[in-house]
Length: 216
Image 1 (spheres, helix red, strand yellow):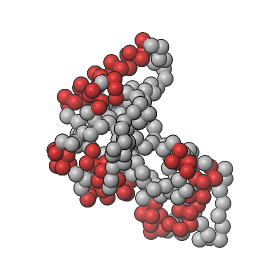
Image 2: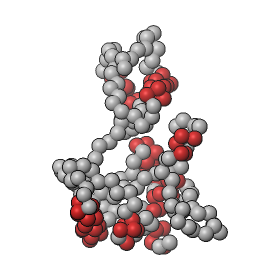
Image 3: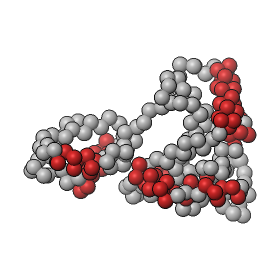
């Protein structure tokens, strides 16, 4: 491990940001030289896939990209980022376990939903992993790695609903509040139950006027 990692350990403010929003944004984690070289490597990978028949009108899904260029491998234990990961998880899950020889069936440091999401009984599930994404271009500009953000259940996203509700109460609002929920990673029933629990137990809205209803 590069001892430089210790200079970038998770701060209390960064932990608070992650626990509150579910996101931790590290602006400038990569310097301009890194951005330039990584961009060239990714462009080269993309053009290679075009020559192999990839449709440029569709998104490129290329999961096993690290062996394509050693530059990608350097991001796995990047000193500016890895300490944030272990600071949030509090431990590292390493495979194979110590003393077990590595073979072709070993994926290495890897836990990305799969069966665990089906078999874990608790809801919400314990935090077993997180994802790190490096953005090399300005996603506010069209054609520069734009992405969509999925909807999450009430209380799990960025909106501070208690503060919003307090403002409405201060303004004397006594009407309807409509929650338009478009998509969830969970089954419809499970998602609805999670939203209803948040409305009832965290915001105290359901039952306040003796009635609760929704349209689906």
